Image (tube, rainbow, N blue to C red; front, side):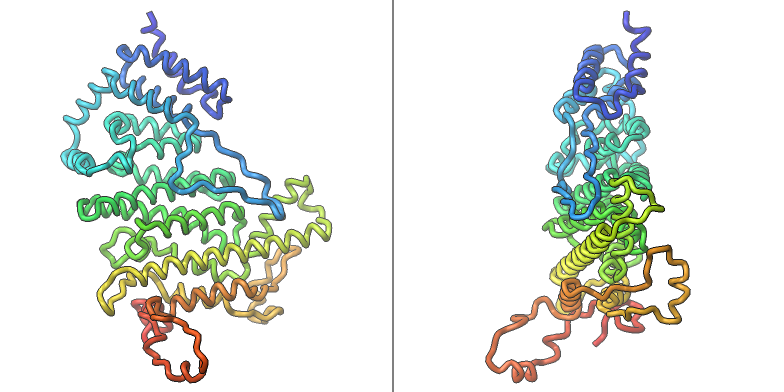
Length: 490
């Protein structure tokens, strides 16, 4: 008796506004309706199965938590780790997936699809199936046939970020990297990471991108030597594209003077450092492409980090972003002047944030370089790849330069278009930032395996005079002048 209207019920449910940020009570009622419909799974079509899967995906998505107002001396709160997934009710989603996977229409559709798949796609899927312990990286690999056939509808349905985030968490890597699925998912991720998006969405989108990097890195590490050339190249390409289009682009925005929320910038650097410090993450293989044949070319990340270290005017975009947030919170129009005490707090807080961001970027860059130098290699052979180390070195050194307080005549064009309240004055590098940059420069210009690097002795000048130059000069890492390959020559 429900046959004539069953399709209309499913269509109305999948297009209902109740799926967008439902209340806890509404979420429970919608789950009850969904499972009631799934009891009739013997009588539904695969198109209806796909729509009901989209409904389950929306109901299991955790709501987007709002961020605190970005105010002076406001605690940022705790950040989620890269490997943490966000769900509202994962158990019910798994229950719905089990019921949908055993639906006769779904079984018939997946069986017919496997018989008509392209041989290259069949070989790709069989390679994933042969990998031992695939469930450790893709827990829902057992539902790969259903998700593969419904992926088009799920991706089209994921117009809200929370649904898109759940789609990334639930989709096995074998489906996510199939054909051009990875490129389409990445395009959608970049769309959510747009500068015009809310700060909370940009923060979560950045974390989702680094979550995908982590899953790809786990595959490269767990099955090292067991992956085909195409699969390994695809995984490396995904890592490189996310680092370029999500991580590096955010850092470049801030360096270019665009007002990026402090919580977004700092969380990006913090998550990237946690990712780089993992044992299964190999910077020398993932961040330093070795040549033109390497499909993964995330060269912008290191250059962008170095540019942030050397950005002496970083407090200016941070001050602009903080002042905008303070005005919005206090309901003060832009044409109204702030009181002197508030203006001073904003300036001091912006300077502190800029110092923290620059130091965080310097420490992150130092960790990457130390891990690259410490990677196993042949004696005298250092894999520097195609990274523009000259630009990295020059940007870091630029952060140590102490500018004059007054602009020069040749800088007149640069300061001609200053807005009211802006100043051409460039703040000298603070002592804490200078010390951190000095430590980074030492890592770039000295061996990390010198034993011992420093010792206490009674006659230090005599010991210094007797040191050999070869014990102080490191393996070539950066270029000073004129070297196309980007290597320092002694």
